[in-house]
Image (tube, rainbow, N blue to C red; front, side, top):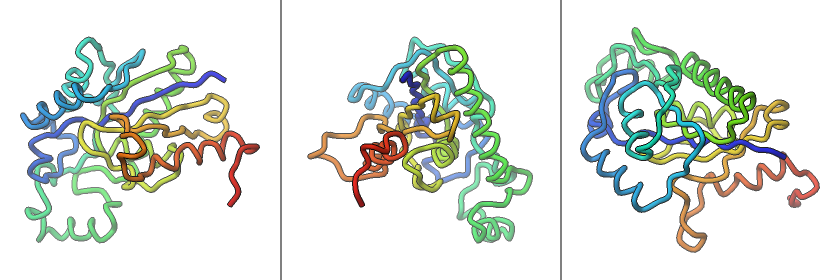
Length: 234
């Protein structure tokens, strides 16, 4: 059965990341540390290549893609941008420790919208709609592989909505310059809208050199979903 792969990669480190700031739609560029990290990682590990390359419109994502894939000409997907933190953009938790709205936001687990910003529900909805449109475009065109460079929140929204193994939003948090590879089988996508998360980016170490993580359960979860005759006993 024909399958499609989508590689989701988080952008490199920005100055805002280093300062612990809420940087959503602010166009914060890569920090020198981020550029160096991406250069080292690209030399040490094989990043997956694809037929199509896509990016959030913000420069930290476009520049990350260009560093990892110098010959690529990315297509910009506006709705892959990060959540809008409104008037909290560029501030950190210490700056906001006496802000009543921020305190309430934290107490509610970040579900409400930041003042002048975007709620998590709205952010997840627009991100997932953009991802579904990308998958549908690939299925129609026959393009079988894609690389998407976006934000931590964007990746977590997609993976928590469609990824197998199932895991909560924050369990999919990944380091800058890292990510996950997804495999989509058309029949299962049409029926259940799920994608097998089959590898980390950069690839995980050999079995003897690594510690268990969420990817360890991906193949078993996919096998249970896709191949009932080969399920293991519980």
